[in-house]
Image (cartoon, rainbow, N blue to C red; front, side, top):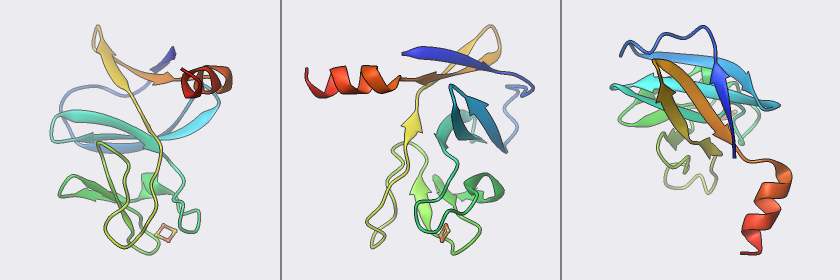
Length: 112
Ligand code: FES
């Protein structure tokens, strides 16, 4: 796994939702209740920008049709039958890092 530093965001406990790029992916970075989550930025329902959404009860809400996704797991709410990818987050020296597996790392893990 490769770790990417996300510049320009202060890890100061304030809530935020930002669309960022890391490792060739577009990620929705969310600060919510003193935790930071990294999720896919594109809603699987109809492509809505999840970074324009909001958080409620531990879920990220898509602004287009209000589908919601668990911030920890990316799992869609009951009845949606969908999910979004999630990525690990680490804080190092006050900076935010997001971990992303390459395509080949994902293939290797699938055959372990
Ligand atoms: S595009 Fe996100 S809920 Fe429809």
